[in-house]
Image (cartoon, helix red, strand yellow):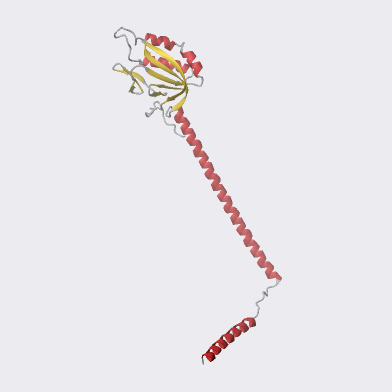
Length: 235
């Protein structure tokens, strides 16, 4: 009995598979019935689509190249502006600078003298102005007195017997004046015979000069005051 059922099932499966195979082979093959003219027209349309797509890709690449160039130019402009700002800050004395320079030490002429009251512990504003004038005449680039950077708007005046530079009191003697120059040796040779040496002796002071390979001048750390300037209005 079981063999009959098994034979029947196998026979049904074989019959179903033969029927499917026969139906498949019976279906006609679909052929392209379009003529050469229609095929050529469709080919032309496909070529036009491809050319349009190529043009769009080219335009997109051109725009992308322009954006990249614009970005690079903007970055270059920003870099130039930053360099100019930094150069202006440096020329205005708002940045710390280092280099070969001359150190002038201002000391009391009578520090080893036995005369009481003869020692000068203060440097007058007039002497400092004279010293700076001499340095500028001999092409000094940057100058600092003590811890104060000297810029074009620096002030020198005396308050209650004490000299102030940039509104700050100078420390007691000795005081170092640091100077940067493009030709430090020449500056040194000129300063040792300058009128500042004789004026220092009159003030009860003495100057010592030393060339150093590396000195650092502090930045001007206050807000520069701009006076006698007006805004230029466009016409």
